[in-house]
Length: 178
Ligand SMILES: [Fe+2]
Image (tube, rainbow, N blue to C red; front, side, top):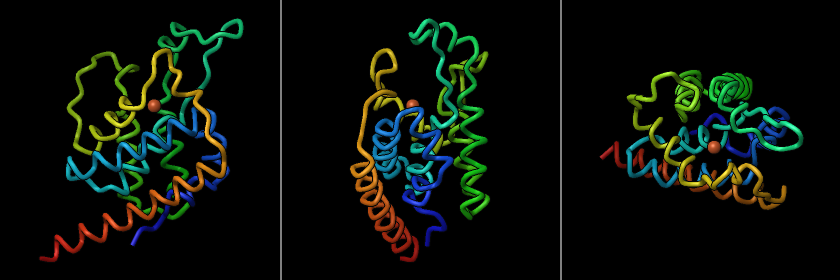
């Protein structure tokens, strides 16, 4: 039913490079949160989990003298824009449905308003789910980006989430057909 799984995304070199750079453990936790929230908000769990998994893949590390410089980040960061574009390219390359790829990219683009001049977004439910999932896993001073997870554990967790998504999609379909 799904064109692309989380594991396929995880195994692609683009995700390996950029999702890991921003923090693999954070990406996985956020995707689990998004999965749980998707039910509450009535959005597609597959899109929510994928968008949350990829939401920070546009990050660049803003360091000055070996330390994270929040001002430098605030002034120059466009990670949501870059991430949306990278995720879209990756998903299309993997054969994702184009409408889904667009929805996921938009949810990534709007997961934060830190780079926008006016912080008053009217988000769709999917976009809200991804923003909330990110917030739920946030730690002070950006520590969530540095939490570690082994390759094996990451693989297991994503495989498990893939299974949960497939089950949830199947149940959604059953519900629709009633
Ligand atoms: Fe994040």
